[in-house]
Length: 300
Image (cartoon, rainbow, N blue to C red; front, side):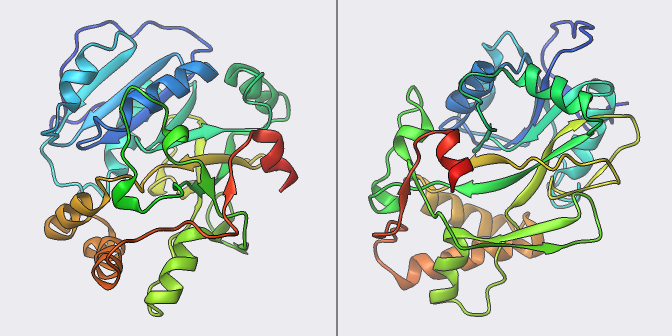
């Protein structure tokens, strides 16, 4: 049951469609990224979205109100007190995701998989059912532009991949972990950048397990990085991550002040140190790789 702290804003019925692929998002001030993220996931076959807004002031709720395939909830509860959104998502997933393949993502994440350009996500989920998998892990692929972050201006009517096309091809490393999906991945642009500037910074975990055949009682444990025990596919999919746009500095300042993210916004405090260390932060180097397609990623 959805807790009393969540208020539902739409009155559209949630149709009972057996094989409907459903996406779940917790958002705050995401009007810049959400249009592209919704379009991308519709294009691969996601049929319904459940979005929980946590105090947006940038028009996010107005944007979502006009989307006929989106069910909108709000809460004023503390993000930190909800275990960084995990409790909210678990409640929504139990209520609306049970029995469905569910995709739990952030507004700045876009799910991709081998041959996603041609194969609908419903076919992917049928394959996962066929092999008996309950979950599909992902590499979180940080995307950035060939310009300084402050100059990476995105038009909400455009696609995020056109604003941030580049990524680090490596190095990445996987380490064993006790909790599902039983490994964690580290590396990429954030580890590269922060290692050079802040040697005590702990690099973020860049593996997630967002696609799950949800059953009531399952639980995400730490964001979508870990899940209660489930049978995990050996395939590795991807989440293109579009954090580094021109609003980055303002978002960092806001989150450092709010202290609602993990460890009192430790990662955002590291970002702030980086921004103060360098006048113009750019992640682009001669080794940066432009995104081409899923076949290119498989080859890498």
